[in-house]
Image (cartoon, rainbow, N blue to C red):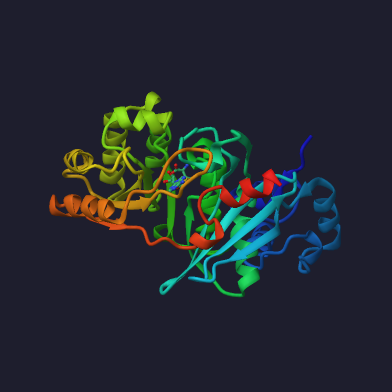
Length: 344
Ligand code: SAH
């Protein structure tokens, strides 16, 4: 049987585990702080825990982690892309972005992905593995240790569909947010989904204050179904209704991501249609010039098309920004570094 992973346990789970072992409750807090504040990767480092408990733990549990395989630093903007190996040798990517307001990390929630979006490199080989909470946390911990600076915000926007690995991702968020761990505020955590409506509805009931980002990428079902298979399961009306309910109940503004693909979804008509869809919603649109993926024939929209698209939305009262491209010289787009590495 697989060993239980200490790093993936919430404080409540650790407390239950300690009482099963006949240990006092405060041990749970000590262990939790070693793992999530001091970010150690071995029970041997937990020096205030008795030798006998340490032996028990090393015989019956594991501590998940990730190891740096490769690191690419952008010469343009300080963005750093990390290629990590999991204990099972799966490879995943994370990105460190340096902003004036602090360090942000983009984490992966799955190795590979089964959503099949046609413009995305992460999905080309399907889903390989669902990351444990501890493995998602470790991406942040190893980066924080590597740079010797605090990470202040996190986006779950690396490879994988977080709502397709629901339980592990929710645990990840709760541990990341814990005052006994890194204590990253919920409002500094963004979860990005391709639009799994059932998952969005479940998330609404978690009573979290995180930001929800939804990869919309099209103003209607026709176009959306051409580029995102998930749109065949959930139509855009259902998706936007779920988003509306989410923002109504959390009072949080939703971010709609829209990858601009030349000749596919970047016309003026698309912008007008999108604006009417999003009318009266507490939201904001982020236009992303698509990163060319060689395996597909998609080309980024021209700068003027992107500016015009944003102007139409803004003029109709939909607040729209154009994503600044960070790390364009280091394959910082979804799944590109990992894919390059796997091909070798
Ligand atoms: N599965 C989640 C999160 C991971 S993808 C989601 O779909 O939101 C993170 C974001 O990058 C999504 O908006 C995704 O659509 C976008 N993306 C994927 N490939 C891209 C590419 N080649 N160019 C630009 N954005 C891309």
